[in-house]
Image 1 (cartoon, rainbow, N blue to C red):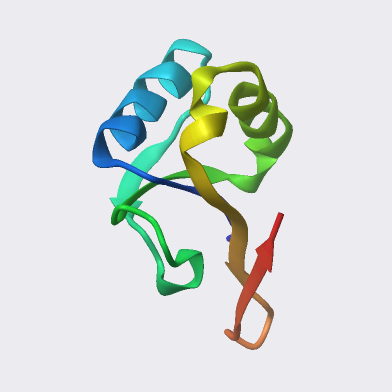
Image 2: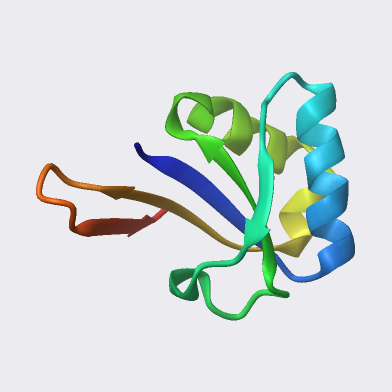
Length: 87
């Protein structure tokens, strides 16, 4: 499965993001930030890639944009190799 992961500059922003996404009907999970999204506070939110457009629109239309450190797509190919793409 492929996920979109949004890393933040503070833990408070990550928790705020979870609430904002939930209010907009975008199911997210708070996770430990993967190494590939370095420079963040240690918490990120993860959503299924099907919600990519909604996640990106939410980031660009709220105060979250100033605290976003990285947005990445993470998944695995058919051979089980990790795929990471910064977006």
